[in-house]
Image 1 (cartoon, one colour):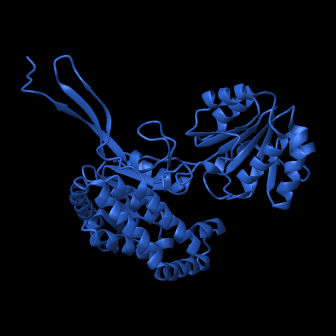
Image 2: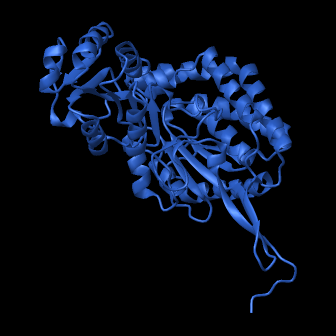
Image 3: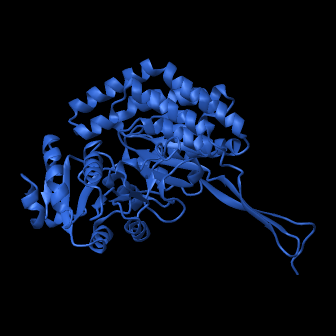
Length: 426
């Protein structure tokens, strides 16, 4: 059920009511087998394609309102759906349906000398709240991943995508009902009031986990309020280090693509580090391509002469998430200096090395403490769909429970099952 709250409503009580219904639905989900869940997922995918006319009409209304309201161009890009995007959403759900059911998997099992059998089994987390901005595809992605992992979810999208989220949620909930599953397994909280978020993230005992997706300000606001556990990443300050043994053509192509092919997302490269021994062979070529793509370059003093029209970087440009056609560029004397820079300014999201030296690649992978580390590949590959997860519930830079792009298995915890034969402990 989609719940719209007004300023005069008891928001906290309404949110708790939703959470109680989600908890009841979660108990039903825990009893479902993989075939039942997959049947509902297939219905979701088919429903998105069959209902795309209504979804696109709702999205067009949201986009028009967003433009009139002065929403940033990058955010409008995230908000806008097309038939191709809806097809990709449906394909992601189908891929999730084809995956092995993570629920009930035995992680390990063994027998103690006293005859007790110990089994560590994967189980759902329970009720998950997802709070997000702009991207309406999160509505179907989150619903599908939560269903696959037998979790109920409460979704709270941004007001700019309200009509689109409603249209997608209607498809999802109909698919659940048609498959004999409680539609309370997926609920949409539509209140624009911030108090609704506060009530959701403090519903201890009813909500088990909160996952915020959006800009740093949203995520920090959630973390500051939450008493329920939160999995998150604050920002994506991604680096590419071009090693002295890199292939220049590969280095130029990877660095260019990582900045230009989707500059407003968390896995875009924001800072380029180049070894001094190869700088003259790659930076002028990169600069020419960046200029053609209208990328603003902010450089250290040493690199200015190799980058026509670059600006001198200031201290704030190192460690900054631009989310725009802007990149910071710095020369380094060694890989150790590059790793130290990443350690100081990075966000532990995604960092990459371009090199032809296997030893250098291994050292980079071992010493760079990020959720995803790329070797000779763009940081833009850090994505649940590209990792074969079907979709992602978000990307975590935390180190406890889940890290990197999170799929269905990452929405599970585990329990110990202990089987005896009248065993007592004296």
